[in-house]
Image (cartoon, rainbow, N blue to C red; front, side, top):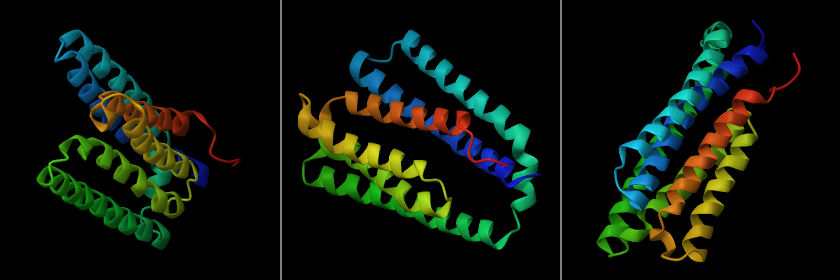
Length: 183
């Protein structure tokens, strides 16, 4: 199997995660904007599952190449760095959330989480040799700051969650549809 197939399998794994996480952000937006209306939740879940299914099918077609690379030193190093960066992201989100709540700025918790999630993509772009993560990460960070400062209600505006979900879904779609590089 080719390196391109392994790359496609890896992108599909990312897209599966982005489809679910994007859906969660959009559900938060929907609940904060309209309440827990079953029709909205059903449409959002259907979109997330459709994107997840598309990613799953891409993964299934290319997983043999990824499994073949699983024992390489480069893959082990990338996985180790990913785990450290991901753990650091969640620790920072928990710390930021607790600090913001304790200083009576809880409306900034979502924006801070969005910014930290975006920030975590920056080292991963290099680790996974996937420059699109620079765009996704930058878009999330700019969005977190931009909507918080520009929109009515500031960081409490639920549209922040919608934008975050859309950015993640667009990143997933891009990763699944754009050819990574010539074989």
